[in-house]
Length: 260
Image 1 (spheres, rainbow, N blue to C red):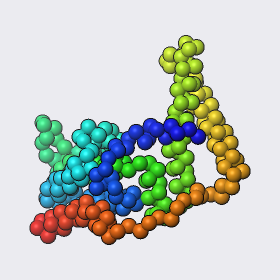
Image 2 (cartoon, rainbow, N blue to C red):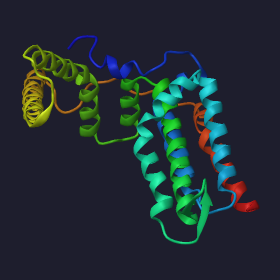
Image 3 (cartoon, helix red, strand yellow):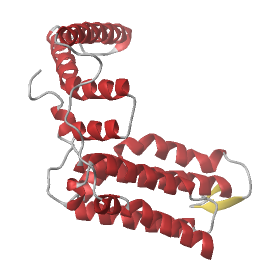
């Protein structure tokens, strides 16, 4: 297991010494999850919802600025939002109810609100998760999940996924080079058959490698969990700093509900 295993995932981490970087991983995980819950609880039909979303965005961008996570990194993180964008764009056209004119098109008013709310909630949650990923190393995130009592088998699966993502990616790259060196162009039905065979071969090779790694670990005393040092308790001040994001979002939500 080389030192470079998992480098592609670790590259998403931005080294730094900010207050956000120094927080314990499990406190940041709790904070992001709580923030996402507050965002999801915001009623999309409420007239004050857009103002609430703006408040949430301000809170996330403030944390990102403190952590030194720039706009380019945040925008790259939003790539995973593409399916939500497609669904949100379709909602105003497929939903029923009173219609309004938007850019010369008749769209459902309720669908427009639902689509906008979905897009806003997805964007805010992904931005918070992007800040988490940019300020926490993948292995530290796994330690945080352990401290949050995530089932050990899931933690181990995630650990090996991070560890061997580059190994499987390298295997796929070598198979692609071998295909292209034999004149493969990827077009037509023949191309689909070749790609299907490649996927099958990659699965078999990955499965066999996993079997070999597991047997090697068992022979060295592996019992289902990796040894680690006892975790130090987290100071109340660290919890207060970590939870400042969801608490600020909760304050925005409560203000909108009381004043709306």
